[in-house]
Image (cartoon, rainbow over all chains, first blue to last red; front, side, top):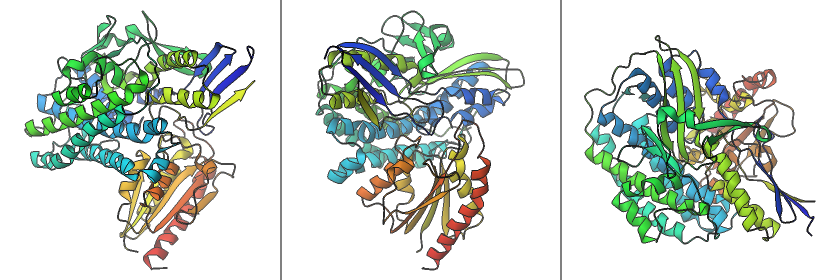
Length: 432
Length: 155
């Protein structure tokens, strides 16, 4: 038995070049190897952006991911506005935050109920849940639809929103258009509060990791649509422009991919657990109340409980959307004019799955000379491997089938992104 | 049949994954106005909202199996399940195959639901359609157009 070799691996996508899967090899009680490749960096897009006009970046990068186009657009816009030295007025910023809340609602509802819940409920997928408990899936679909609707009303279109531009929006929605969404959002808020309670009833393995949590500092509000600094619980506190001086992307041979590390310390975690741990005090009363109501501490180190934290953020997105609509006054001009200036800058936003950083360099005519895009999944990848090592080390005695499912679930804890990531629907275990 | 939706889906930046989008674009000027045509790269489960209230939906997407590139797999979704192997390689997190099966479980499939899976050859980022798949597009467009006309005529 001591020499028995167990291999846990995912099937990779034969159809898509360059994308991979997961492999864990155990020999006896020793972990010989953990290899993960769930991310394909958007290098093609970076190359495609060079030579394009600076105002095209939001539309082009929105196409990288079908589930978080707003995150990409917003990070690109933040970067371009920083280069050009402009600051939009507060109502424009609030509209961006509202649009982003739509994306959080859509993405978090999809992940909580349709991608992550099956792991906890013992179903292979949401399809089987729908057969036994259709109301659960219908709830998720209605939440998603409400998030989509915000993206349509503010962004002009739910996927690849077309109303968004450097400097603001092509057209600002009227107050009445936004107020028409209030009844749905009130339902979504109530449902989100129930979601937190429901998520807390799930079974969680007794497992914690000692994370370095990193997220944007948005200057006194819970970070969503941007932030001037990137901070962590271990002393990282840098202007976003210094992102690439501290986060280094290393080419990982086994994965044929780039993985992000903090130069000083190695792996770190971005996403709901990090935002929650760093900015708990900035959550709305409703979101904090929901967390307290289920006894969730101010810091969650069990990655499997990210489903509860994601539910708390779902509450936060609904509360914020309702607040913005209540306080909204249609701006006189939907955008300010932005003239190109030669320079370079980073811009970031908090995608549902974590901090997304863009860096552009443009010339005086507004032509993009260089582009670098670092999605959250690239940053989280070394941490996911660390989680897998920790988890397999602690739960090695589980039967193969259960260990495999739990490893798959451990990856899904991070909600790896769609277009940039393979998915983990098929796993295999090989015994040596 | 009054309300008909034709959906072409895929990823416009990934070689033959764009074929469903190409088919939908070509159908735009080809179909009577009463049939709605949608070319979308949306997250797939939202498609259920698109066909809500429709009498018929026709869906075109790229697929990867062992068939020759350009081959069309036509599946009557109310009569059979999309063979899993055909859609196994979907890059979508909640895939089109998942969405179809979820709609079936929730009784949200329209009375007439047809799937046209078009066998692709290559999917590298930034590539155009492969010549074989591009050459198959007019035939697929014609096939779907005839289906829509038959449905509109009550056949």
